[in-house]
Length: 389
Length: 159
Image 1 (spheres, each protein chain N blue to C red):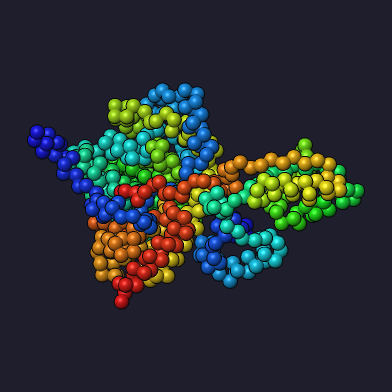
Image 2 (cartoon, rainbow over the protein chains, first blue to last red):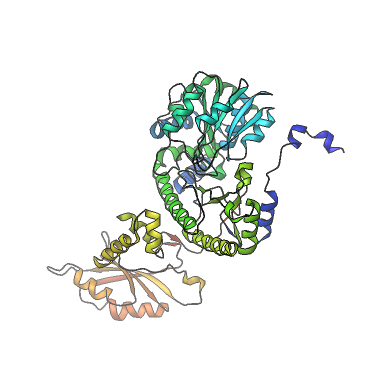
């Protein structure tokens, strides 16, 4: 068989994750103190798990309607209204998806045609660019900077918009930097977008994890609701990563088309997860508060710990990552992380995993116990001391 | 500041320095607050949660229901004090419902527990009757699940 001839060139030309080698190396080692994981260390709260189990006991093992059960969509609307002042019609403006990932996929696929430009601020989650490429779109990368607190600025956006711009991806609260966009920041972005026909894909999966400031959605600003697709899900807020459940919200003319892709590719999101999610939305506000407070403590702890070691960090305001600047040690990100791994058995993710602009940085997840973080900080301390000699 | 209490209840090994960073306070302030809690008897002690079943220590735990007659003017307090002063008594509660005191006792063997009930507890004046239940297995105590392995099943993650 000539597999090269069989496979789609668009797919074979997609770059595999740049740090595959690094993770293979981590996988080969034992007793590694890892700060690499991008998911909560909490187990899904029991009342939510129980709701899923109960749905199975009651034989709810069928497909649901394509967009998800109406009762779940109603709960999503109530939740978004309650917590973020967002308003969507459950009947036609909400689609329940297989994680936030699927929501990103169908949103981009429904909007982007070959040649369309999609603006992607980086560093950010790794999936936007490949999905845009699969649609034949052209990713236009904006590198956010430490100096700008990794926010997207109006100036950068203005300079990037062309006649071909179709979509702006807005990945805040941000993985890997922990940056957020507050109301004033978003207002400046909105001012640039008003009067254009550019849509916004606002990835708000970490909306519940902001510290000190409440998350603001761009869709709440004047003239933005009409152009915004909100992507969110249950993974981070309720520690439900393995359930694979997310959703998107957008004006009906958009969801109608996105739903078609979802219908043909997926049919419907997992039914058990949908029942569990309903319980999460109804009775999970306290769980969110508890976990967010835990993350906040660890955030302060790891920020103080790294700063004390003389490692310059942007103080994260959202998600559960910190993104220290390690460039001053004279090693590339990958070298730094690889040597830290080999010499001290501590794993953190090279910033380059999140775009070329991640050179000089590393992503550290603090979705770990304080004792674990303490152990990792001790290893990092030992390591940087050897570099400073 | 019940945030300090909550944090220490979850993990008593946190140092004042760590707590200060996590809660956005000064170390000195945290030390003062903890000291005050200790003086006021709000914080009574710091202990480790140990799963003795994973060691070779031999022990049995029993829960004993005690029915008794309250004393005039003193209710159950005097007798309760007499009982909780025995070092083998781990916990003692005054209960509503079918009996009055509930005590948790630990001994080396069942015989030792039986001896305690027969020789020390039952003869106490005002004690009417006792019912001893031996613990067969501890699943969870003070929010901690016993017997579970502490493995991070998330592994190292991926991008």
